[in-house]
Length: 615
Image (tube, rainbow, N blue to C red; front, side, top):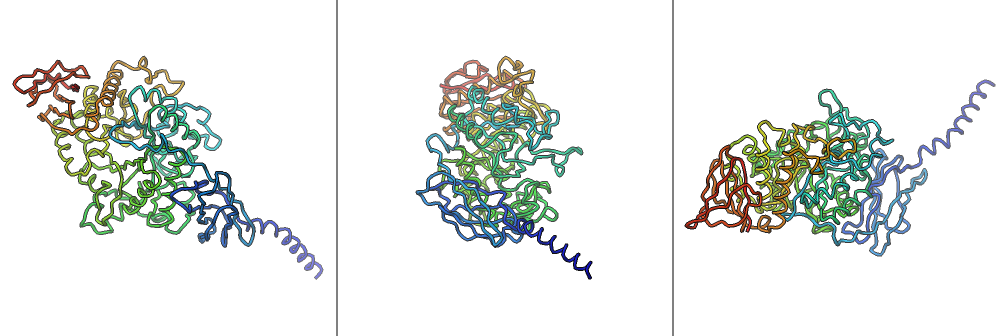
């Protein structure tokens, strides 16, 4: 009996010793607040905070100098939602909130930020611009100190095409003079969200893991990836770009997160994603079903709800908390940086109702900002379906400003790489009557999701120059993929994402400088530069109506206002007679002066060449 009392006494002492630990374990913990800051006099007020932590059950939030609403906590007690109303008179500064439960309190850091001046920011983009797509990790390494960070030291290796290579925001800032010299007026960068800190063993190719160097696998939607820089550096890049007359378009992803985001294991709501990592629909990529008025809803759901490559967690935008989170996150990036536009990834894979609400929120706060959506489809009917002015089956108009011109991309590749008839380019342009605004398309000859133009079998420098002539003189807002201006080769992903030569201090060749380019590279660069300078100097090339004057199998002549473009895709020289008077000088210096007689103009076109006659 004495031994029993001794044992009980020991147990009682042990229990008493554990009490502080148990109480501490039960006290609320706040580990992250999204968004971490907001603005007074903003179109979204109140702003809804998503608080991540532990032991949040039964929480309430007090706001000494702001107004807080009721708190909603998920079943696991790991996430809390609370609305914070900001009076118009609230001045910028720190406004910490307090989260309270029966077990204790936790501080919630929160800041009211000063709004950026509107002048010179949030400019939008359009046909007066030429957009340059670059991948920050593959463009230039301006800050070597962020190459191997303590947070993620082992995922940089320039010898591996799917690892980080060291390019960053500082490198882009350093190369703004190059872009300015080339004639670029806007840059589009891949997402700069924070991505996974280690190798990705879920997305594997040839038994090799990958990394998130491309930015499309976010693990934190409110942070810049440490390999690229910081939010302060992004804002500095935007400011410097604006001083150089260059706008900034940032890639965003509202369709999915990365598979390593904390939400995948612990979601804020039961319907945050479509399914779970263990059990979810696989995306069928049948985007045509979305435009099919006869399709059963189950056909559309497979495309809307499926996880990309069966790996990327698909957001459920029908969950109002998800929708609000994504909308606020978009406006946060814009408000923090002063950027001018958004490229939205995987546009068809998100319900049009969400896009309508998302675009409405953007335009309410930043009416001059512009958005281009990615609809990866060569059928003009599909592009038409997703035009912002077109009511879908549900009668919803998304209001998106621009879409990529994938329908024109395919005949450009076929004609100028494969030697197929150039007539198909004209025939595709004929389909412009299907669109409400053909000038709201973004034509291109290459980008980061397809093989490089010069990586295709049969590609030549002459064909590349013809393709550039087409893209930079047609209607819409043209896009140039980084390195195409110097004929960089490259096959499918990731070979199409090679480092720009000269962007790293150890590079033996610097193609950012004319002296470092080969004669063929310089020939293409000069061709693009001439076209961009001409486009900037000739408003007709940006705004005037297009008129097709001659279309044959391999010759194509068209007029835009007072500018006439003539192309010969044949392997032999050709003579073309235009049924009108054309006067002017060929800025590309590839054609002799045209001969005018009897109201007609005769051109002599060299093999696989183009001419641009300006008044």
